[in-house]
Length: 435
Ligand SMILES: *Cc1c(COP(=O)(O)O)cnc(C)c1O
Ligand code: SF4
Image (cartoon, rainbow, N blue to C red):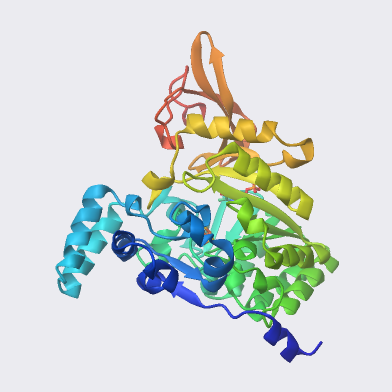
């Protein structure tokens, strides 16, 4: 097949930014209130969809309750009601740009744009200088944020990196050249894994990705066994792996890394079984797997999209059927539109349990519900009664201090707790890692 034929065979990505969402034909058919909601909310939070999401993922007959629509389109409840009213009034009054801009800036700052201050606290320091664009929290894994990978094919309403997309978080959180990452990795022999993340590193051209991967195949990086890519590309633009111009080159690059002795892990983000059902994603998964790369899947548990055990059990069954390994079920972070998506930890534990109970052992490999908190990755193993008191049984899957990995602990039951910071020690004060 010639290159021209491939280009003709695949669709071209057309990105639709938040400011244009209310103008697309599918939205123009909805009622005026919904259109105004979209305008007001997208003035504050970042949104972007593309032709695949609109044409192939969203079921427009089910809008506004369709889960993929809820995942990708603005909803008025994503803003606190007072904020929604205030911004809405400013827009309706056709106020000047500066007035709207000032109100929007204030609104954004009140939505906890820097959750857990994770950017600042995990940036490694080398020769007394912070190495921008890297995070090294757990010994074995270094996160790399390539400068050209800080956007996605489409955005998730619950994204915890939303502030970066609109320029209010520190965009220095990206490496401008691969050399910076290599200089650090060369000296950190304890690291066995490199995780390219973003945004979405798969937004980059294969040539750019190649500049990050090929040097790692040299003997000096023998200690790097696993090369991971955090991506929602399979879900939001599967053509990245099938018919895009450089799709074949990308797959050859995976093969090259594998032939050089690396394990290539695609850390795919799938929020709903719908994302596994199109012919395009099925082909993309087959092609990636044929290179020898392993696809592992993770997503947060969020209201309006996947807060039902049968959605997860269905998703895990479909994954295993396609050769994708379920990896993590996350708890959604306390930032941006979190009040819209969050659900009580108590419910999260129940949903995970009911979902796991409905599938076979092969389909039970996702750990959850998991919170990426400041001292580490905490899984809620369940709710138990100890000495007559109901408590959350928790455990560190990952810990800033490696001595704490695997250690269990108990947190007091709190019906309203939605995030790690809401939890209090059940018996001993303070938490053992603070003693
Ligand atoms: C989740 C995470 C990792 C990877 O953890 P694994 O359990 O090895 O998948 C690495 N670094 C950070 C900061 C993380 O949050
Ligand atoms: S794909 Fe990931 S980084 Fe991109 S918007 Fe969704 S959650 Fe955020």
